Length: 177
Image 1 (cartoon, rainbow, N blue to C red):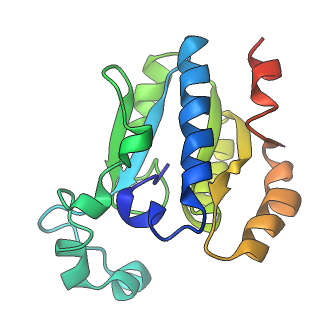
Image 2 (image 1 turned 90 degrees about the vertical axis):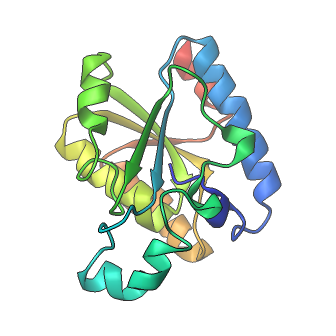
């Protein structure tokens, strides 16, 4: 989630993260899993208001964060393929402003394997909302990143285990067998 050009470029050591993500996506595809992508971007008239709007700014929402801007596109190293689910959201969480839940349910998906940037943003929102929607949740700790390392560590070790199984991408093959 949110492996977008503009976010990935702000992550230190993004190349190893992208390489692990790419390898994991291929593993999931090889096991017949559904791969889904969530990205944030605003079309005309969709600029957020309230706290989010003040943080981003209306002008930035229509330029840097516009739905068609290069910064809001999924990074080429982990780009979607035909048949993958791709949704564009206008809030931090992936469910509230998209049809992601409906697409997942239509495919019979009941388990979400989560990875994303940022741990304190989209990943946290997805864990909380996904738990409320009764998904089984698996967070791949080494495929999540945050701009504050201590916040990432706290969420991965203290908060997420309350609602999700937290593993690394190296642990995933054993779970998929």
